[in-house]
Amino acid sequence: MSGVPFQLPTISTDADVRRAFARDASGLEMTADAIARPTTIDEVAELLREATANRTHVTPAGAQSSTTGASIVDHGLLLSLRNLSRIHEVNTDTRTIRVGAGAIVADVRRAAEAVGLLFTPDPTSEEESTVGGAIACNASGARSLRYGATGPHVRALTVLLANGDTLALRRPALEKNTVGYPVAHDPVEWFVGSEGTLGVVVEAEFALYTLPSQLLGLIVPFAHEADALAFVVAARRSTVVHPRCLEFFDQGAMDIARKAEGSSSWATGATAMVYVEETGAVEAHDAELPLDEWLALAEAHHAMAEDIRVYDSPASQHEARRMRHAVPATMNERGAARRSFGGRKVSTDWAVPYPRLAAALQVARRLADDAGIPRGIAYGHAGNGHPHQNFIAQDADQLRQIEQVVYATLREVIAMGGTVAAEHGIGKLKSRWLPLQASDAQQRVMRALKREFDPYGLLAPGNVLG
Ligand SMILES: Cc1cc2nc3c(=O)[nH]c(=O)nc-3n(C[C@H](O)[C@H](O)[C@H](O)COP(=O)(O)OP(=O)(O)OC[C@H]3O[C@@H](n4cnc5c(N)ncnc54)[C@H](O)[C@@H]3O)c2cc1C
Image (cartoon, rainbow, N blue to C red; front, side, top):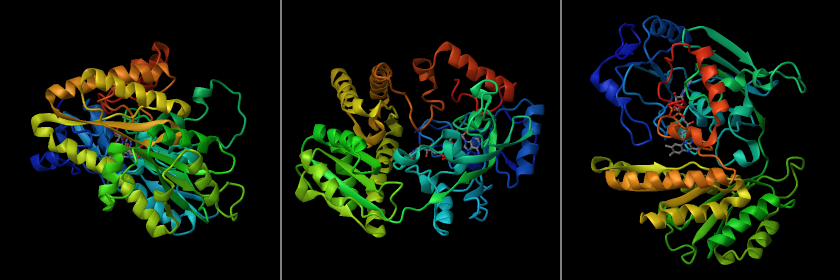
């Protein structure tokens, strides 16, 4: 099934083009036999029909920001959806927006904001990822603490199956339904998070919401990490403050963030910090935001009060988010610098129920210490119990050691009621961990869905099911 035994004007086998699509953010490199860059849905359908007729593997790709090798492949056709990037006008009556799969997430957000509406999916990579990728990975971000991941906001999808057939799917507007198995109630759900293995998303309609009228950002440094994590738990349980995001930085992540902002001397005694965004209670839009209550909560958890920063203007809030983004971006650069030595960044994406995060981090670091490897850094969505513990493997030997430690950590995470991958999907790099989390019966249901939509197993080989 390797090779691409048919030609179409949208397909290139040029070596430079193939190389240009050979990397994503996983640190892996895989070169497909050919790259397809269709500009219309009809061209995608034609290509899939040919691929099925010729039993050729097809791997859909958006902007290739996957951290799990999901959007690269070492054979067959890589299908780039980037050119399907149309953003239709916002429908302000229905509060929806229809977009092509290749539209960049942040561009969709800006289109909604231009008419005073909120587009909720917010992966940190929003400037370099597509909505098709966000749907296929069920991407989430800092604000998912309040709004949830991408999936719930998808109202309708146009999906092409492996054989080129079109499915136009709309979420049922029903509030109650007892007909048949719940797994079949809402076909949109089948494709959210399917990582390119069940169908090719070509268009989507998203729900939009009222933009919050006010936003307050805070960065709260702590001398002791345990206090920072207790602050996060208290903020989630509070009825007085209403965080829409609670992002944690351990010391290593904090150092990167401070350097990116050019303020390395700020809060020098801190070992952790928490970034907070507050937009007020959903039901009380114009009420004053509870700054004093946040400061009191921080003080009650022994924050370094003098060093707390308040971000109350859009420009300063943009700066704060840039600091946050600097952490994964810097780690990606560090990982890339070790590629020629057989090393790379190893990013974890596990999550536990949020009150258990402090315990899970302790276990993860103990396992690293026991193996004699650096602990890496940990940062991210503490409000969801979801940090990214990232390591830089200096060479191939250390890579093997780190992977063993990660495996041991994931077993502990599962025992704590967690997940091995909360937002990046499992792609190729992490598909071997599927059995840690999904029972045999759950895996059989997934394989049955795969057989139903892609009977020849042509789409995204190696992703999810291995
Ligand atoms: C610096 C950085 C920060 C990140 N931060 C976050 C974060 O905060 N939250 C988060 O969730 N992720 C994050 N990611 C991971 C990644 O950006 C997301 O998973 C993103 O949604 C992938 O979108 P993409 O367009 O790059 O998709 P790709 O990487 O191109 O593809 C990802 C998967 O989606 C499939 N796919 C893509 N388009 C389609 C389509 N149209 N139809 C069917 N399948 C398709 C591919 O086959 C593949 O399986 C980050 C990555 C980086 C590098």
